[in-house]
Length: 254
Image (cartoon, rainbow, N blue to C red):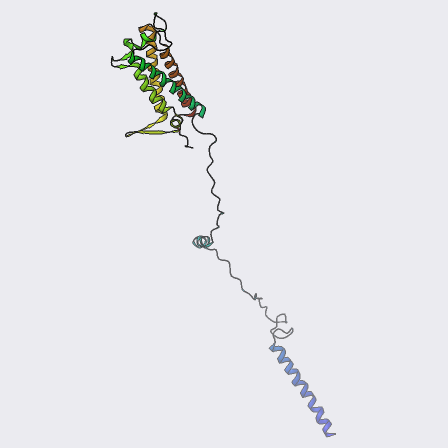
């Protein structure tokens, strides 16, 4: 009997101690709902929620740093383009080959006729196939022995024609047509301009000889007329070449 009463007296004390411990545990844990100081509990102050990872405002890079960043970037390598071969112009500059050969043939003919007239002048022989008599007709002997056949009474016109055509043959060769400039001593001359000047001078002299035959001598020389025609044709070839292909142009030697 006495032991059962003692046990009944000890039970309320145990309940109080256990309830007190539970209250202290709830108060120690603020996260437990209903506990004093816990969010949402009656009478508890509201606490603002703070994010776990604080954020900082983004800083704008200065212009100097942006420039350094651009310079730090590796340069993009452009693909290397293969070297292009120079485009060769179609055709060849200067007159065609047939025109150059034609000019050379004409120059050789003029040289041959001038050499024959010079020979007849110094030997006194009549030119083959040319009449020797009459007046106002073809008379080569009268023309090549007249006073007008001497320049300043010293140089025969036939000899000057021979020297002239030696030079014309040289500048009418296909190689001379391909040349651009030629050196004569300290002079550096354009072959195109030299050719044009030579043929212009020759045509001026031809006009004088035609005037002398028709109005001073009164006779016409067939061989002289042939040289005049050849000179006129070469003059035309030179003018046409200068007008179409220009002066001073050169062609690469093949």
